[in-house]
Length: 253
Image (cartoon, rainbow, N blue to C red; front, side, top):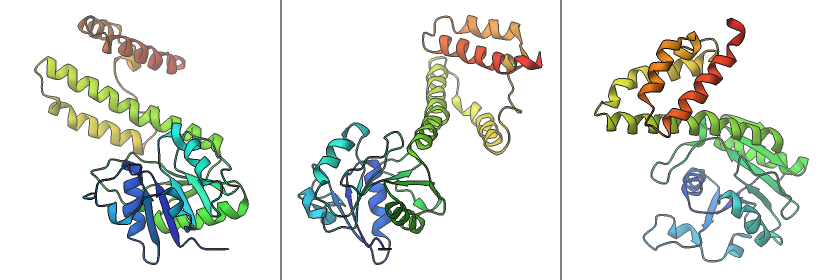
């Protein structure tokens, strides 16, 4: 099996930058990137190429662009002889040049913070056994947690990630805004959130659910709804989530 010794990255957003810095640190690996626009003072500039075709000497090209642009970028690589893998959780496996694959890190990234891939789960898929093996072996160099996952299961995992992380973050953002408006410090909630989230991650979340909806505490629920009657965003969310909790534990009553 041919070992991957050179990588090209298309895209210089948060994911592309994190990929680049992690790959650049690997001994014996050549890493280049292509960005549609890049300034000369950008730290990636010395390792960037001006045309996509300049990446064609690589063994692997990673497409780290927005989901809606993946197929369009893949069409530029039809004559590339190496492996082409996109890095999306929601996008199905594409054949691209006949050596298509998926190289999906399950994590949120930012341009300003470079995260080590060692503890980030990587999910791999290839159009054939050889491509899958090569991607898997390469991924093991980067991460301690590598798994082969089909497109169907990966999309479901991505959905779960959105619901659990993105949605909970949005609830916290709404809560911060609500307390700021009411001149109450959000800091008071931090110990509660840290304890609750830690318990949910390390125990069975269903079994440790608490709160007025779980207890069917109608009086408290009505008080809360009254307090939120002017909150157009929070009121429907409170109602829907409380109803979901109540029905989830219906068998207990």
